[in-house]
Image 1 (cartoon, rainbow, N blue to C red):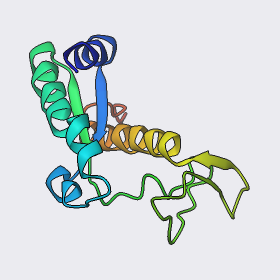
Image 2: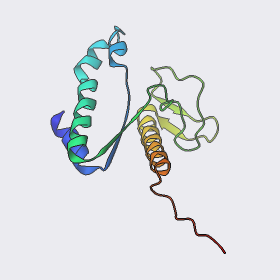
Image 3: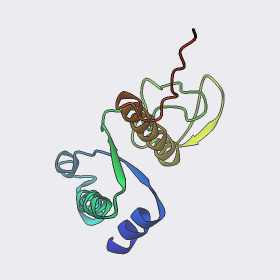
Length: 133
């Protein structure tokens, strides 16, 4: 966990992660052991403090963002996607998705969008306005 979090921080200026309600997920008897063994909460904590030390940005995406249900190609959002469905086809554009890969792509895109909005709101990243006389 330490090596992977260090590698992610060293190799990236920005790391995007989904906020997960790990405590709530552990209550599910079918998932609790796997989730507890994975140490997800600890991993994000390590990313945060290592990112702060290295001057990197950690962008967290709300757990309710439909990252698994959003088509990474066209943006269509499925109404329902049960946890046991690992692969799905977009009804709009026909693209095939692995739910975890699609979620990762969508979390990255959402994180970069949040970062871009922050920069524009603070005045960074905007083109200077020239005055015509």
